[in-house]
Amino acid sequence: MSENTHWKLATSPTTEVQVAEDVVALKAPLVRVDRDEDGGWSFFGPGSDEAATRSTTLGGVVDAWPHVAGLTDLNNGSSAVWHWAQHGWAVGGGCTCGQCSDPVAADIDRQSWPDALPPNRPVLVERKVLSGEVRLSDLRQEDGNLLVLGPGEQQRTAEEMVAIAIVDVVRRWPHSMHALRALQEGRGMEWNPEALNWQEYELVPA
Image (cartoon, rainbow, N blue to C red; front, side, top):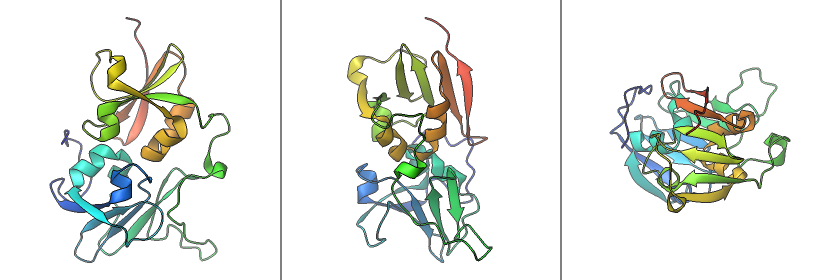
């Protein structure tokens, strides 16, 4: 597990949690989180909560899916759904006005997708980041390529990277959508686990 020096959640990072198998296999985005009355955590994609799950630690989930770190207000017995259009979690129904329908855990749809971002544009993703071995740390655009990287300044070899459509990158890391849209050539975005946001920086030529 990666560092947890900026841990925001009240539950310990070593706590055992359940993650749906289709989310672990990257077949579905992590878009729903449930906490039972005893404080246990479960993570799901769209669809039924009857899906098969796998045990891991809460720290491992936050490392693999950093948008989970924003669930500091998720109390025992409540749930949260990722709201694609508003780019954040809707906790406990999300609305109290009585006029809105509760958000539903869903895959990203065309209405939520930014027009300026071609969904099939290839992105080069570090294999260890994709597998969850290391946490997502940086987004970069250099030499016309979008790069998704873990910690470290070193250059990655071709064997360490894999090309994935940008829509699948966003499905894997929902919190990356707006950062990828804003990223300019010669610039990078670094995830700040303390502020839970992306911070832009300029790439230094080698």
